[in-house]
Image (cartoon, rainbow, N blue to C red; front, side):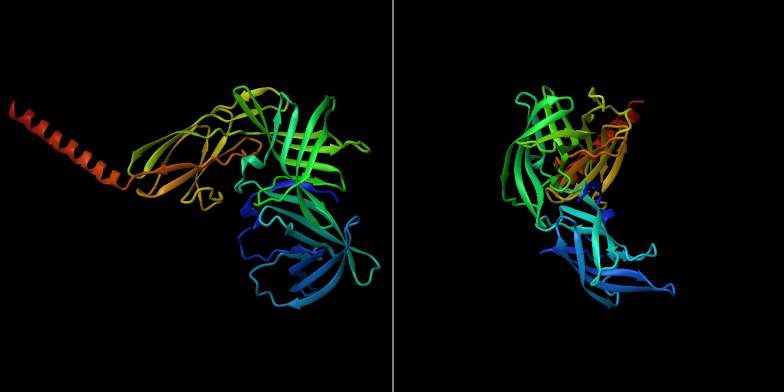
Length: 379
């Protein structure tokens, strides 16, 4: 089983839309709708179920196929667009991880099988990079102890995702190699588990990992490959992608009854060659500013208020006095990598401020008139 990590946005995935999703449960894939073109240029819609026959070869057998009318608001799977019976599934939520992990896949028919069998290929792990993410669930590397702690890692086991806590210790540098020193099953009480280990390919993927040094915090996306035959298990670092680290909003200064000036520090990241750098306004960094009325809201297109490029401040307008607004900023570097942090900043503009500002403006206007009259009188 080859799983390729592919960060995507929720809206691009169709999450929350009316498009039905395929589901995988107890070894059965249920596909609510499949588009199948006919010879006359029309589209026939089917509902299908397939049973997993082998977890090793990822072979599935078609157990039901029923033609239906498309009354469910969209199509999840497509078939036969290339002249074969290949089925493309853009999103299958993984069991026991609702709303967090999902995969896209292709079903390739196995010739000569009856009932028809398919091989599951092109599995791609979809990761929603705009979901709420708890930093505590990301890996953290301690340069003093040389231990990489992974709070939650998902491991597929006979079609079921099981969560574990893990720790790796750095043992040598060429290539960078770590040894597994802890692997403990745990129960996850939320949907935010962020590492994945594929026992078939013996590869591990960490969407986020932190390195904390004196006066500096850096974040990365990391991939490992297990050393064949190693016992205890050893892993070599096969991929590392620097990510922008956003340290949070440093100042929020109200300007009027419905606006506030936001200021933040430049992001920090590390170059591919390992050289630390503070990224300033000239480094083509983009900041997305989101606003919501609930703490820990999920950033999406509806809550996106502004996109700021080449600056570390922004005046946010349209805030309603008397309501607590939560502001979230996500940094994006020029490679499209997004910051992991979800630091919500609360802003409350008291409803009385509107009256106060009105009274101040009225007083200033009255004083100005009096000064003007005095000037006229003594000319």
